Length: 493
Ligand code: B12
Ligand code: SF4
Image 1: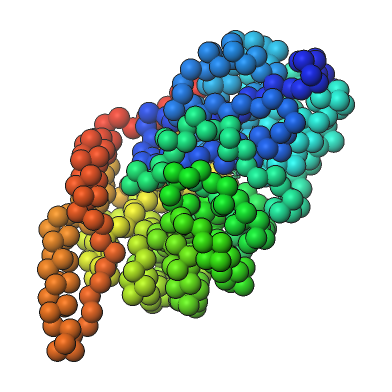
Image 2 (image 1 turned 120 degrees about the horizontal axis):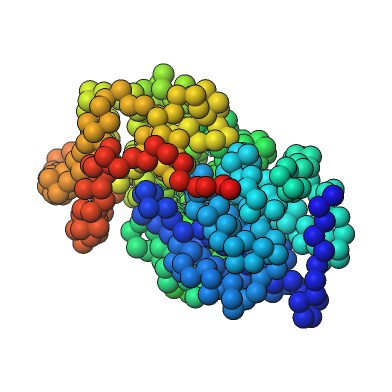
């Protein structure tokens, strides 16, 4: 049996290094968010010496290993990170083979076999706040670890998997994330608009069962929430300069009563932050008064999963919404003056006509901040089960919602051209100034009974900034068909 015995490091403490892997070079990801997963794990074992290395910002791994001498190194990773994560662990073992190496997070949970390698000692599956603490406690006490659920341990060339069970997490009993460990990175944590952000997790999981989404699978179908009072207590302690708080939940507003309470408490405590979160369209349609209250609490950006513009496509995704509801939700947000980052899924089967129809919808609904994502069968999803045997790109670096890892109906070059075009047209100056003129016209005609026209346009300065920042990305995307990697770069030996 593999049993890691703790060798004393000073005051009975273990040096634990938690790592956020570097972004892979193929990835399109315009934001850098705080590594909440690592901050939660760090606080779970706060009695030890824990450090966080965010390799998206600081790539100096060896320097950190030399200075900190960790006994245990744990790395996280989404699917698009898994190659980077494994390469980091390989480096760690090369540096000192006695360091215990571990991987957890989305990809390890759904595809543990991808993480099997001589340089990976331990794997954690799913929400690991409790199992991580249990493991570190056992390690410290020199006790066996095989009884800890939702884990795998390397034993020679094989892994012993422990039982997978549901997560019975009481979110309110978890210590708050150890944000002080990332203080030196804070200035880098920004959204795509360069706002300084802090992430707060108010719930985990989602009661819905969309076929393309792995979030509900990660929680094994459960939806658990935090007490609004504890969320607000955390918000009070957030870094002063993080003016935008992003709720890193799957479905923040599912529990309506809780959302009302949260909104009231934020207002009562006079928390002066802008809020951004995800919501389902049916929540917005059924509870516009809640959204209005949240606006008073600071809600500025809402991400709506519109996904598709045809009911049959929404049904295939098992989204349990309709085009009519989507439209209604969009109009409600416009009426309330809340910026709507409407998300759309672009199917690799799209023809030029489909792209045109999607753009027409964007125009008809006056959407000025849409986000387009390419339908991606993420491991763990039902979609993946259905189409993993027909992947065009198997390299996980490209599972970023921007590359099409499935074969495209259009020639790949044409597909990406259309993908770039729909962004370019949606964010064009022409549309922008057209809507300004329309708004002025509607204001002038208001007294004659004309309808008020108000949309969530970006400021002109932001538009100019987006165009400057997006230019190299646009070129990269247009030429992506040339550089798409069709091999697996990580040598697991
Ligand atoms: C906030 C967020 C972001 C932030 C960054 C957050 C971050 N920490 O890096 C931003 C906006 C920048 C972002 C970017 C992207 N994101 Co994102 N994001 C999220 C979101 C909404 C919340 C993540 C979060 O903070 N969760 C809270 C923490 C506490 O939970 P957790 O991460 O699951 O961690 C727990 C366990 O997994 C486990 N664990 C995790 N790691 C480890 C490691 C060890 C050692 C151990 C012991 C345990 C362990 O324990 C943790 C505590 O319980 C999720 C949705 C979701 N529910 O996960 C999507 C999600 C993670 N994102 C996703 C994607 C695809 C992306 C992008 C590729 C999109 C893009 N092209 O921009 C990029 C990738 C960027 C990157 N590689 O860093 C996907 C990933 C799917 C997958 N299987 O790969 C998700 C699931 C969304 C989805 N609908 O599918 N994202
Ligand atoms: S896509 Fe949204 S609504 Fe659907 S399961 Fe995922 S988090 Fe829930």
